[in-house]
Image (cartoon, rainbow, N blue to C red):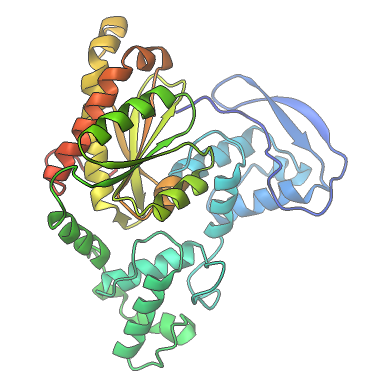
Length: 373
């Protein structure tokens, strides 16, 4: 886990900026000094505490009463971020804020229907999971209500004798809950269909549309990987916007078959992440992430094991990062570390990742070694 940057990001919606007092506290279990913000009149901190509690991560009452963004608030934030598959840094960035807001929605709290902007929340994900478990393809279980989810709602309504208006209101939700037992343990139909699409896909790189995302520090690697893939016949778009949502939108507009993101961080261990949430994971993303993890291990082993005398193993994890959630194709985010070794091994990493993509395309449903994380 990266070292947390313990500060309060002022991205939280608010209407006033009351005076506050800055204090120093000690972070739990780490003994390091952190900045805390106090001020009982600040609605942003009270709203944060309330949302954390509603999400199952209550903050120490003393910090709540005093309006304090202190060590226990940081602890609760880190726990929430870990649970939601977000980057764990103990600050309220845009992704964490959005996740806290979405966690406050429960199925049945509001009418759900196709809307602009699209409804997002845990209630939407719950709806998608229930529909998918009953065999109605609501698309990926991503908590974003789009056309696929609306079509699934209407198909379900027709099947249970309701007006097919595409609105998940009380009657539709009641019928879904009544059929809850039939969905237990079932793989959502969208995963079954994804595996079928993968089996029927082209088995080589020729004309594959691949988006290579770069988040800073990996420009040379992204360029090298792009060059190799293009030489092997792929149509490659290199994307370097720092914003994950913008990268996802660009990859979607490109109609990419694969997204591979690259970022450099000061960790001691690499990781490859694919999209996963409660009851669902991307079948293609999982298997491509496994291939990429193996590729990174092979590329870095000779450098890292000689320096650290430890076995190199890249983590492969299902997460809900915005870039993985909002891309429509199999997507993997490779976090590379440590930086000094990555720079030395740039050529090997690029070649091995190109090989990982090639091998995955040849057998995209291979189930050899990994269990969804």
